[in-house]
Amino acid sequence: MNEHAAVAVQAELQPLLEFTGRVGSDPLLTQASTGNSSLKLDGVLWIKASGRWMADALRDDIFIPLNLTEVEDCRRRGIDPTERYPRASLETAMHAALPHRVVLHVHCVNTIAWAVRSDALIHLESRLHSLPWQWIPYVASGLPLSRAIERALSARPDACVFILGNHGLVVAADDIQTVEALLREVQERLSVAPREAHPPDYAELLEICSHSSGWDLPDDDALHFLGTDPLSRSILTRGLLYPCQAMFSTCRCGNRPFRIIEDRGVLVSTSISANNLAMLSGLVQVLQRLSPSAPLRYLTESEAAAISTPVMDRYRQLASASRPASLRR
Image (cartoon, rainbow, N blue to C red; front, top):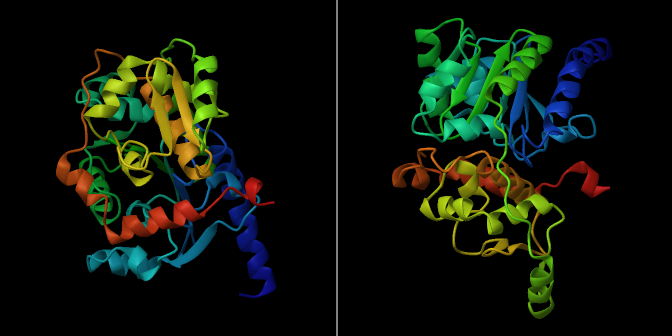
């Protein structure tokens, strides 16, 4: 690519970088390395690299260019594009399946709070009426999700908002301004006031820390919700609500990077990664938006087991190894 062409491409990418950075800096939309955005430009799919933080879009080189024809060829042959492009986002196939020029996928906590309910469709139909949207019952990331998106588009070709069951939100359009406006609209319509819990017992938690090496109080006081809210503790014992709980080991019994002290609060491992900490904060935000009467739809055993695929494991490794640019400098 000559210098003139490179400058032109950068001018096209700059709005995407700015938009991605704004979205990635909102913990109610993305947590750690979750979420991804893309732009189709002259036969190239510019998409966030796997395991990178959207918040770093203006500080780091987080986007990679993929040959859109080759990505489509992989999809037609039933091959996940990440097998050919291992650095690409786990959701590359989904981004390619959408005809829109700009695609955004986020783990919006307000969306997830509705998407993990067994009666989600009823509530979403009421809240999202008049918007061109489609409901996608839970399906694994990668090729399965891209095929589900294609089926949804067949049912409603003008759809540009997709609620992913037990997963998150996808918004697409031909320009960033429209995507951002749609995102704002969906956020407002799906907003849920967080529940409050009893304050933590800092004296008791500090006492435990003084006798237990490797544990400390979290910087994010909201994490204590897991300890002081009985409903949240009950929800966590019943299973996984969405894949990131499993990918970042925040809800499995073994090797948790946090300790729930019942009715007191939470302690976090002194070695907890920035990824796990951000993911844990996102989980708390979701739990705060679930009411005692909400009928929840947990991932099935087979769905939870399918999370441990080579592609997902590679993503987990990349995410665990990554840190936001602000912590690397």
